[in-house]
Length: 281
Image 1 (tube, rainbow, N blue to C red):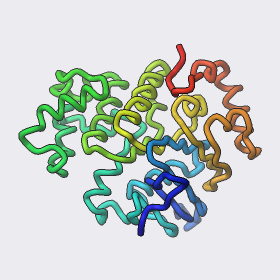
Image 2: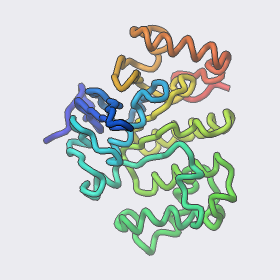
Image 3: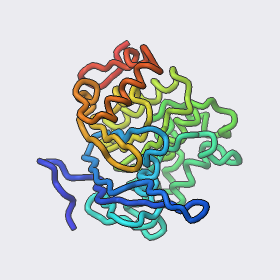
Image 4: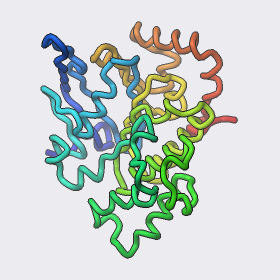
């Protein structure tokens, strides 16, 4: 099945009619994702936004094969995706994830170098054994870390440095799609801006596509090309990021914007961007 084309762009990720239902206490069922369809195109960042419990992180976990949907399909570069242990090596490498809490997503007993080299032991063709020292230094440099960090453990690093290591681990396998699940929400505001700028730069340098999960609309303005808005498991609106802030069509999107302005005040002003997407100081 060939990848679908939108205009001249081949779809990197295609989700169709995705449905996920969880069964809780008393056998009560909760539909976390309700017939959601969306695409991610080459080189774009699609922000999936919504309040807590809206289903956006469940979608990310379905994409990564960590949650099995009850219905619907997920296609990566034209290839249908099943559970993670049944995916071909090309799909396992091509889809990588950056989690919300870098401290808990990194093995505290391993050094940074060992954490990153672990990916190459699983997929040795990406970095042959004789080239790994050079490859390790290069991937750390990509995320703004000195090669000396490789000998340190995560507990010796700041939260921002830990998240850079998480991003480096994802980049080590040369992915085509990066899934970021609230990747800056656990960081201080000043560090958030640095990590967002890094992700924007990496997307351009490595020609990445990004599915960026967030509840923070100020973050959306800095990083996203398009936005998909979730509410109670449903996709209520998709629109260009600029239009989100000027012409939101759905009442729920307008409510999110009003709440963000009330709660964060001038935060939106600090994330103004120029036409290239870089932060304006």
